[in-house]
Image 1 (tube, rainbow, N blue to C red):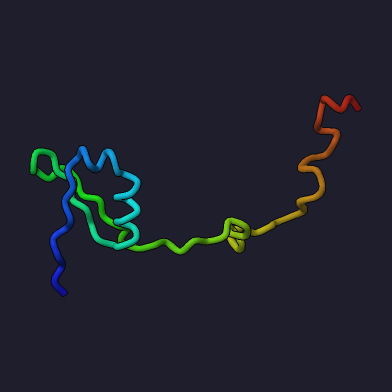
Image 2: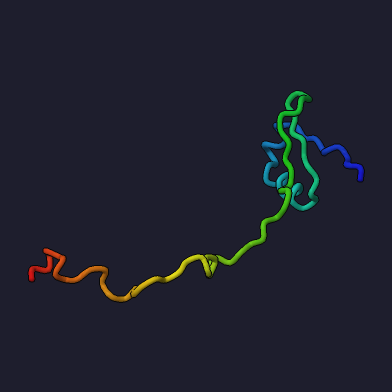
Amino acid sequence: MVESAPETISISEFKATCLAVLERVRRTGRPMLITRHGEPIAEVVPPSSRARKRAWLGAMRGSATVSGNIVDPASDSGDWEALGE
């Protein structure tokens, strides 16, 4: 597969149309070369691979275990001076 040369754009034009350029790179998947006085200074490329979006609810399911009683207090009430017993 032969890759074509990236499209070029001057830095001043990129500054004026940044969001449109980023959207074009995302939509087409083709990189954009940004130049200053004809010299390349940066390249905007699409992401190499899209990360699969995961739902945040339940994202940690199965990553923890419960050991012991999680309802009762961690210590006896006699251990606490503030309770004043």
